[in-house]
Length: 224
Image (cartoon, rainbow, N blue to C red; front, side, top):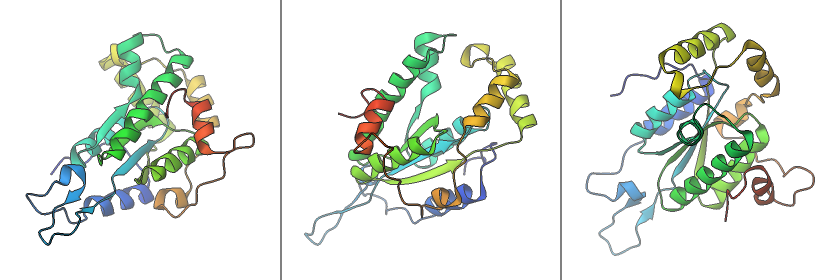
């Protein structure tokens, strides 16, 4: 049993994640890694839908800690954008490159879901539009979606970010209080219905006929 992640996340997120992780696992000897349970009666195998986990929250709220936990507990492919940004750009953080990297990782994630592998996307996903778009894309490849909202107090967020910068300056970026306030002002807090899975997916924004079109605009080269 893994030690519980240090992040603080919502009651709805915690309850839904606990429900998923407590479900009975396929019996030993099955092709569980591909979501397929073997049958000996000559019938087609039963295919279990893979799950897309979305960690949602502002910087310093524990998203990556939680994503790493899911990676192990649910044998999920973890796609953490910041690791790629740091590897490619170091201390720079160009917005245009960020969008492209997110798009490519989304493309990898959708293909992994098609192949039956659980995926955890660790981007923050501050807008409801982004979350609706990924829910739609996941549904189109036959996957389920779990949204996990991470949140801490402003004081705790500041403490964590300062500690992280002091401990690993090459793995993060400095963030001022004004920047954090600006991020919080643009953040769409997930609704309880988003977190418990009962919320319907919105129609695409005006000007886009489908969510596929919106994704192509928001995340270049995200989908084929």
